[in-house]
Each structure stands twice: as C-alpha cells, then as structure tokens.
View 1: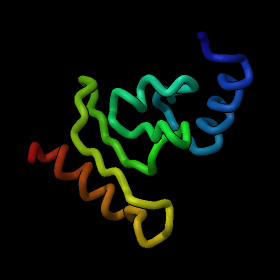
View 2: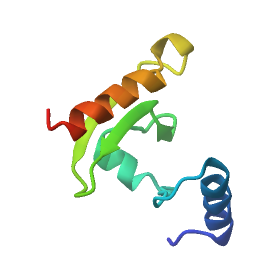
View 3: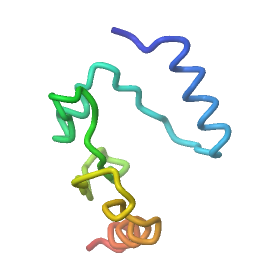
View 4: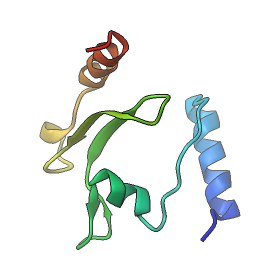
Length: 90
C-alpha cells in the first residue's frame, strides 16, 4: 500500500513549516511502529514514544511513555541531552 498524494502533501507542508530537512515516515499500516515495539494493537495507534535513530538506522534511544499527559512527556531539554550523549559516543 503506497503513500497517498495527500500524505505526501501533508508531510511536505509540515517539513516546510518546521524547517525539517530530513525524510519523514508515513506508517499507515503500523509496520514500523510494530517493529519498534510502540504499536498499541488495541487502540490501533502508536504509544507516546520518543525514538532517536542514527544515520546508520540504529535505534540509539527509545522511551515509551505511560500516558500522553504533560507529566509523562519528555522535555526538549531531556531529548537534546540524549542526542548529545549519542553524539559523544556514550
């Protein structure tokens, strides 16, 4: 099942708006979410998660959060710290 023209347009609009210069993934059938272990089969959507994948495609950081409430979300600072750790090789 290919990606729809509407999804491509939406991704381009988001990338342009947020100044994202890397590819975005559309995973309508949930295969990637299942492979990453973040798929909620009962609700048929991804669990709130943060995943950092390096240029070689290796998952370097993954955090699945218990809820979508503010208390369970990671801050931008926490995520940037994880990126820094990865970039420093730890």
